Image (cartoon, rainbow, N blue to C red):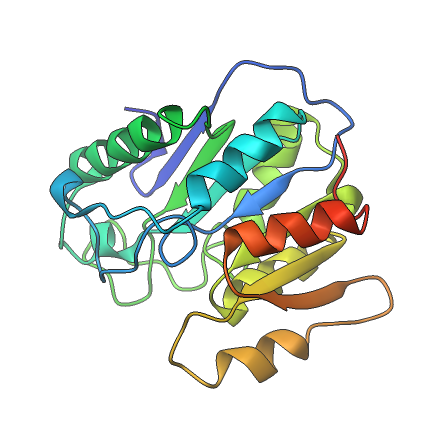
Length: 213
C-alpha cells in the first residue's frame, strides 16, 4: 500500500526524469475499459493498443504518470486493497508488452462520499491539478513540456490548471458534453486535441514533436 492519507494514493518508481516532459494518463476509459467503479482485478480489460503505446513512451524515456479519480473508494464500492489489485493486474498486462507506469496517483475524495472521504473539490481530484503538481514535485518534471490524455473534459481541465503544454480528449465517451467542454480549454499557451485512442494520441504527439524524451 502507498497511501499518503486516507483518501490519497501516491507511488513513484525508480528513474531520473528531472527536467523532462511527462505523459499524464487518466485510467478508466484510456488504459482500461470504463466499467464504472472498477475494483476487482478480474474485471480489468485493457483497451486495444494502450499497453503498446505506454511501452513506446517508456522506450523513449518519456515518464508515464497515471492520475485517476477513485470516488468508488470514497463511496464504499470497493477499498484501497481492491484498487491495489486492479493496479497489479494492469501492471502485469503492461509488463507483458514491455510497458510500465513511472508513477501512480489516485484521489478517493468526493463531495458525495462517506465519512472520512467526504471532501468537496479536493485539490487532488480532477479537474483540480493536485495530482499532476505532486507528481511534478516528486519527479522534478517539466510541466510546460507535459501532456495529459483523458476521456473526460475534467482531465483536460486539470492539465490546463497545471500549466501543461496541452491535453487530448479521447473520443470514446457517449457524453456529448465532454468534447465542447474540453475544446473550450484551449488557449494561447494550452493546446487541446482529440484522438481515437491512446495509441493515436501518442503517435500524434510524437510525430508533431510535442512530446519528447
